[in-house]
Amino acid sequence: MEWEAPPPVASDRVTVDLQAKFERVDVAYKTVNQTPIETAIFIPKDLAAGPEAQTAPVLVNFHGGALVTGANPEPFFMADWVRNLAHTTKSIFLCPAYRLIPESRAVEILDDVGDFWTWLHAHLPAEIAARYPHLTPDLTRVVASGESAGGYLALQSALQFNGTAKLRAVMTQYPALFPDVPGFRARPAGVPEQSPLDVVVDDAIKSARAARGTVVIRTSSPWPAKADLIRAVFATGRLADLYGEDPEGRLTLRYALARAEEAPPPLWLIQGDEDAMVQKDWTDEVVAGLRRERPKAVVKYTVRPGSHGFDQGNQLEDDWVKEGVEFIKGYWLQV
Image (cartoon, rainbow, N blue to C red):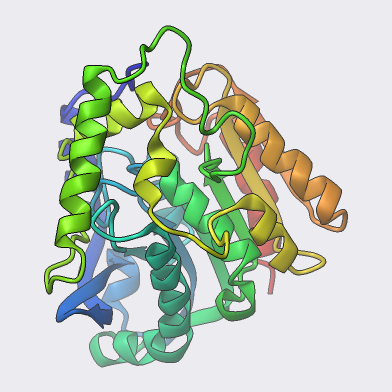
C-alpha cells in the first residue's frame, strides 16, 4: 500500500514555477499558543505590477498530507493544473497552513479552517491594499480547492463553513477522509494485528499525547517529513486513530451533511480508480451522500485511471481537466 509519489524533482519544479509567476507574501491569520498560523498569498506578477486599479478573483488551496504532513504550499502534492488555473485567471492565490496531527487534534484543524475564512473576509482586503494599493480581492468570487487531506478541508469549507466562506464553487481531489465512511477504519487484508507498522502509529500517538498542552504546535512539515507515519497509518487502516478526540463527531460526513446548506456551492470531486490510499469507494460514498442528503447540490464527479496523486502532472489543456475547469469557472467567475 505504498503511495506512488512523484520524483523529488517535481517539488523543485513547482517551487521554481511559483517563484517565476507569482509574488509571495506570508501573513498570520491566527495565533495559537504563541505560534502564528500563516497563509501564503501569491499574486500573479503581471497583476502585482499594476498600476491601474484592478479587482481579482480568489482561489484558496489547502495542502494535502493526510493532515499529518505538508507545508503551505506543499509543492510535492500540488497539481500543475491548479497552480496554472490561479495564474491564467489572474487570481489571488492563497495557501493556508493549519495545525497538524497527531500533536493537535483533527477537530482543531477544523477550527483553523473556520477561522481562516473569517480572517479572509475581514482582513484580506487590507493586507492586499497595504502592499498592492491598486489591487482589490473580489470576495464575491472565491473558490476553494485541495488535494487529499486538503480536498477534505475544501469540502468541509463548502459543507460546514460556507456561511463564513461564501464560496462560489469547490474543487476537491480524492478528498474522502471522513472517519465514518464505510471501510475507512478497515484493516487491509493480510496485515497482521500488532505489526511493526502498528508500533510506528502507537509511538506517534503516545508522543503526541505527551506533548499536548505545550506551547509549541506543528503547522509545517514539508514532505517527506512524517512519510513513515503516513505509510504506517494507511497500511494499517489507522489514520482515524491519529485524529484524536471528537466527541461531537465534527469530522464525520454525517455531521457535515447535516450542517450543509440546502444548496451548497457547486462541487467538483476528482478521484483515481486505483487509489489505494483514499479509495474510490470512499469518495463514491461521499458523492452518494451529497446527492441523497442535499438533492439541490450541483455535483460533478470525475473518475480517472490512476493512483493517489494521479493528476499532479495534468495540464489545463487536458480534456478532462478542461471540462471540469469550465464547469467551475461557470460558477466562480461569472459577474
